[in-house]
Amino acid sequence: MSELQTNLDFLYSSLREIRLILHANRIISFDLSTICPPKARENQGETSNYLSSLAFKLIKDPKFFQSSEYCYNHLNELKPMEQELIKSIHRDYLRTKNITPEFQDEINRVQSEAYIHWLEAKAKSDFSLFAPYLAKIIELEKKKISLLDNKDAIPYNNLIDLYERGMSERDYDSFFTSMKNYLTSKLPMVTKKSQKVRIDFLSREVPIHLQEEFSHFLLETIGFDFERGAISTTEHPFTESMAVDDNRITTHYFLNNCISNMFSVIHEGGHAIFGQCQPHESYEYYIENSMSMGMHESVSRFFENVIGRSRDFIHYIYPHFQKIFQGIFTDVSEEELYEAINYVSPTLIRTEADEFTYTLHIVIRYELEKKIIDDEVNVNDLPKMWNDLYEKYLGVRPSNDTEGILQDVHWTSGFGYFPCYALGNAFNTMYFEKMKKEINVGELVRIGNFKPIVEWMTNNVFKKANYLDSKTWIEDITGEKFSAEPFINYLDKKYI
Image (cartoon, rainbow, N blue to C red):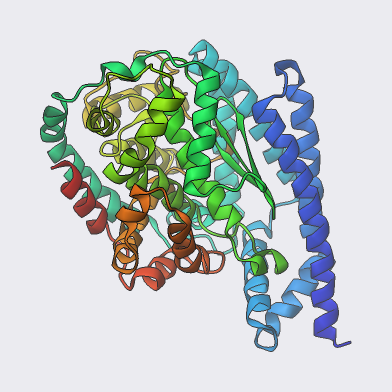
């Protein structure tokens, strides 16, 4: 056996062990966010942290590093997918090279504590309960950046690279400036048009068991495979790719807002379909779930908005909507349902935002994150800064911390993630134009036949996502360079 093969085999053996540990950790983390009793969260968090540390120590094993670097130095002698694996390991090595197991333990512990205290602070609408833990998160993020050997001179670029390889603050600034200028200039006109839309029925009480039945119908419709997936409930909906045949989603049911669950389920279902349709070779070569966050969000928001809020989709689900909800909405026409779910009005809660104003929520978080990482803000000033930006861009002001700065969980695990939500909107409108040229999307959705749509996504969107950076990936799919223009054109056509 050659020396190259010996090193490669050692890496495969280590990666298998790491995968098993992380699989167990995902199960525990999923439980922690769903059915774990409140008093058990701390112990559960400790177990999760232990498993994370165990996996990290395997990556930090000098032999693992030596074998990966040997393979990296003989990259051209490897098969194409082996090359992708080794390049991925090398990128991860550069990010974690100077992070000790002890420092990683501290990161895991602080993030776990931050999550628990965020839950308490949100429940009590008291940012001061969370502020000390957010301050620790910020301190750790800055320390991680300082430990990078080849760190970018622009601090935030180092976080962008973690979630959206190939992008930069310059790319984000250009995109978000274009979106902010367009959205704030058009918002008064769009909201005025929406004032004529009937929305009174959206707050009607719908029993949870009926919402659960509707959730299963929606997931089955869009192509979610219940043989390889499951649905649960949580405070803040999310999706977890547990393993090759285990992609789980969560939702949150509101008795008087069944539409919230409807789009949470479609959104998270989109994430899960991405996981279920990854090429098997991605698992074979240990590069599964290597796609960027923006890629993932493009798929979830494609199903949620581009498809889920379309006339064709509402036409298909309307009879089922009426049947499952057993007379609750008999006075609501198909057109009224379509108009209501596309009603535009500035709101305080990002996850409840309409398709048009949603990106402004991300603009606010992006601007705050840059200030935080650039040392331009005191943690205790963040709630007011948050509220001021909501008033400036959306014309609404939070009256408490729960509907303001505490509404999202993401800052309990660091920064750099939020912009990906908006990038997803831009990506999916780009490949939607390509898709429409090759298959009759509207007609397929209108009759509830999602199989050709998922197949197109599998062959074009999912296939290379695990080893291309964002810019290369979207250009490979569409032949076009990334820009805000397609998304603006999409919104213009639908809302103006």
